[in-house]
Length: 466
Ligand SMILES: [Zn+2]
Image 1 (spheres, protein in one colour):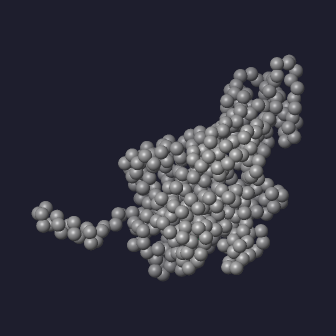
Image 2: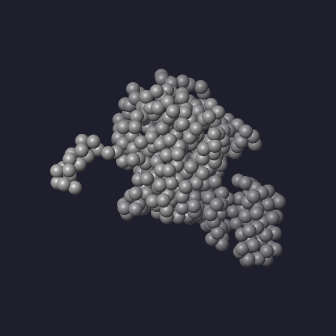
Image 3: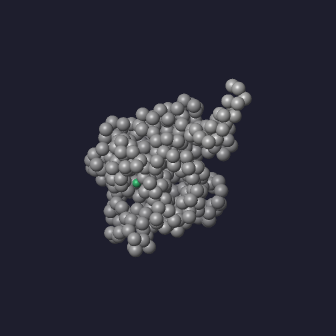
């Protein structure tokens, strides 16, 4: 190229910067291509999988980013982002596609922060939970988009009002708010998209999550459902708190203060101090996803409202990405807080579904299949107990700092552990039925050797939950 042409090219680039390809809205085929591109550029740290299909048959694709994709590594927490649950709230979808590409690019550039994040976390990104609604909204385009067009799924159902309402069950359980079980007919009450997401939540031991929306700029934390019907406006001070209220406030603030302008609080003609709000104090909703996460699983989810315009014009996407990028990363890093560790039996095998209780917080979490657990906590001192049917509970005093999680392993001793005497004295905890006790006794007395014992024990778990 002649010197004069170089100058012209540089001048043209300065005057008309070419946006990277990614700063554009992605229709469904383009979104799939973008995710496949990440997978092809980062084959060793990514996996694209589908959790099911929408009502119109589009896949609900999740991109996983991790140093060992497809595998849960013990003590490596599972994290998720869910975008575009309301089909016409599209910024989350674009930000998540962008985030996936960014994580891949920066990993390939050996960015130490991103490398550490990918090595220590299993990140699941679902850019669109409602791909059918998106297509309806995208047909209208950004300018014509209204509050409702494309919000619901193809069958006209608002997916953030479609999760089983566990608040009723939780009230019946007199305050027990963890692992609230579902009605037998829950499948019939949910849409395909909701069903797919619930099954997904049940298959992975997610620890932390955010669910991305638009129409306001605020980080919203549980509960979304008020204990009594209230509306918007002057009743805003009525809040509906979880036992992890302060932790949720902090998680929401991590996002709002890492975001370019959310923390200012004044956005879209509304005001939220510090850019956060309790869901119910803004407006109460039933059958939402974030409450379901908290009441049914180990996962702590918040809802991020990210843009005044539900369908921002394409030229605003780059600014939005830079406004959200640090917040999206900082929020993932919050999964590495509190305490984590193993719950082990006398043979150092992990105990699944062991219950981890914190004395001052009425909300338990459970260990995963391999016996590892993750309990998000604010800095402080806590009495933490691990318990499991058939074992003596173990309580320890734990000091939690602001940085990396404190590692606390529990070694549980079975109630039936045979002392040195030939006839063991058996003391049974109240939660164990006699048949299970006999089963355990048999497994100890008639079968020798750890492998068989392990197998028997696992069989036993199936018959009595906690
Ligand atoms: Zn929404």
